[in-house]
Length: 481
Image (cartoon, rainbow, N blue to C red; front, side, top):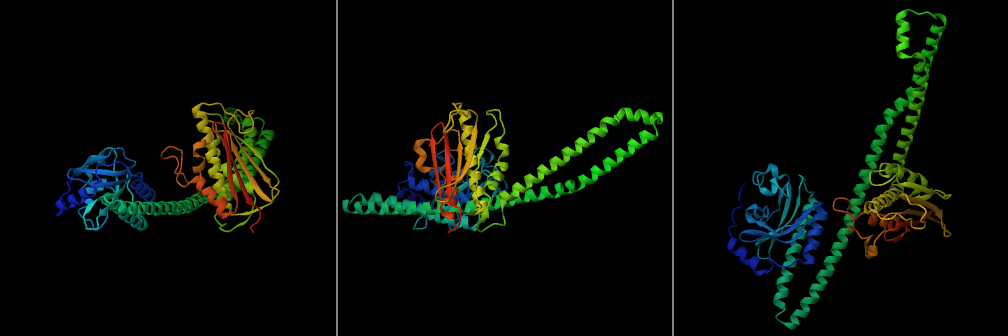
């Protein structure tokens, strides 16, 4: 492991760090917001604001890491401050001789990727870095690099605000002005955070929609080719088998006393059973290919890659295609019985909508319903339906109807765990999630809300009882005004 040398201006740099009076202070929300934004933008599990002291690196803010400091000789950031005019990016630490045998690479947290943007004071002293870390090799896009550098400047702005506040508190008049400045700055930071969250939601949604649609359409295409070949040839196989069986029957009629070898072989293979079972096998194969072709059609209906504009579609077809995508999650598991799907479809006309995006909403809501049911069974609480206590088994009910105002109504209800009252106001917020780390990013309901409300001029509402179930109501105009 190559130990990082000291910068030429190390004494002055340490004096600049001490001046900010930030070492070993409590966590502060404005710094935590910046590390959270950095992690979201770079899509990494770890993000840190690291300050390099005489013998350690200390974390003013940390996301995804439990420790508050590490020895300086182990710090990637100690290398970053040696060249403060540029970022240090290590795509794969195992391939970098400076870090390959670093204990933080060889063991927990198993660093593979590192990107550090230096924190440069107005006087030009590098205090540390705003860095993002991953346990797998990766690269950053130019946009991510620019965003990380911009956020590092915001860290310095926050440090400047802290030191100015300390100085201004010596004067009552100046203190009042500083408090006002802080309120304005925090307001701007919150607005910036909200804008960044909304922008990232849109980017992630667009990428996921594109990737999911292309993947589903690609799978459907790859399955369709061999299945079409099999289906087209089954009729020929059926004819050939029938002709061979007829020929065998003629041989048996005209040569009732075959050679002993033929007779022995006929008894071994049981020709009567073979003739009877071949027809059953061919019939089963034909049924199987028809089933696969129906699945391929449902996959194509779900992806709808060629439909970027609003157009009239069959909503029930979209719901059924989505249920097919989720079929594997509805099956019985060791923890719970099979999830029952109750369809109460009304008589609907074709509805003008962005079909692929609406299918994505169905996917999010139905996936959340399955999650809620699984959580209910995991906690082993009594299962009660939102409107009826008759249904004890895990159940998802889907209803469609037309409102008196000629709006499409889609209701998706489950008898799962429900939504706790204390988070009702947050469930449509970007990146808010109650799921464990790694299982959800808090984007599904936020994206669904934007698709229904912003894209379709509709409404997305819900009602829930904690521990009993949740019902979501989608309402959109049937025709585009």
